[in-house]
Amino acid sequence: MLKRIDLSRNYQNHKEEYMQAIERVCEETAFSGGKFADKFDEEFAAYIGVKAASGVDNGTSALQLAMLALGIGEGDEVIVPANTYIASAWGPTYTGATPVFVDCTADTWEIDPEKIEEKITNRTKAIIGVHLYGQPFDFGRVKEIADRHGLYIVEDCAQSHRAKYEGEMTGSLGDLGCFSFYPGKNLYAFGEAGSVVSNNIDYIDAIDTWKNQGCKVRYYHDVVGYNMRMEGIQGAVLSVSLKYLEEWTKRRQEIGWKYIREIKNPCITMQAHPENTEPVFHLFVVTVPEAENFLEYMAQNDIECHRHYPVPCHLQKAYAHLGYQKGACPNAEYLAEHCVTLPLFPEMTEEETQKVIEACNAYHADF
Ligand SMILES: *Cc1c(COP(=O)(O)O)cnc(C)c1O
Figure (cartoon, rainbow, N blue to C red):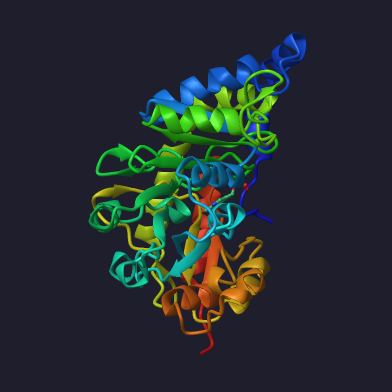
């Protein structure tokens, strides 16, 4: 069975280098925060092209801390796309704010700038834009709206490491960028990790304090803080992987563009990739008339597929109290019902890529 993603191949390819990096952390016992986590912060900020980064324990914390840095809390509203992983909405929810869900476009499947303005009230403080599946959202249009209404923009870059919008790295565009390094993301830790990046040093300073139990100086707690530091081992592993991110991204792009060129089946619809963006194909999502039927068909062909995501945020039980009804975000709902994710990861062989293409092309939906 070809897996949708196989992390063991990368581990086997670079095992020695990873193990040496982990060993150094152990020898120096720099386990929580510390020099290896700090070193990665510097490397990652330089890589993204921002002034500073603050490594944290996961991407969800990154989003929560970004909300805190902007002073977003009780009574505030934050615009979030309906088509995203749920954690995009947890950030504002954890700080007491309300996520306000906006539909995606019918072709890019990213937040629809046309539908943002009608959701803005005098409580709206920020827009969380998600570069979903590794495809940058229309930052230019979103920025225009944000500027007109005095709103902050937080980029959720959990799926868009090294993706570019008009030549600039995602994460460097908005007020803050939030990254996840969950295993399986384009850049990932051997465990849980995340990062908040910004060109505003004050935000990153504040986040450095919050994530560290509210201290700048040990045992002197300036604010009610959290334990959200990055682990040293994760920092060391990420420093190794960061060196390969360009190579891995190029390989993802090769496979992604090959799928786009060679999968020719009227039953299969693909995401649009506007020319001013450089997607990094975190997830290769397509829509088909009958998702479950297609999943079964692919499994019969020894190809594992998944569904990202079967329920849009506004219809999740966790947000039932917000009162959204079916039909509130029709494009996101269509996607949730029809989406299927094809295998795509840097270590996929030509043969495997070809196998996915052939299976897709031979598929006939019974509808
Ligand atoms: C993975 C992901 C997150 C959460 O990151 P974790 O590290 O798993 O907490 C947030 N937003 C999006 C879009 C994601 O894909």
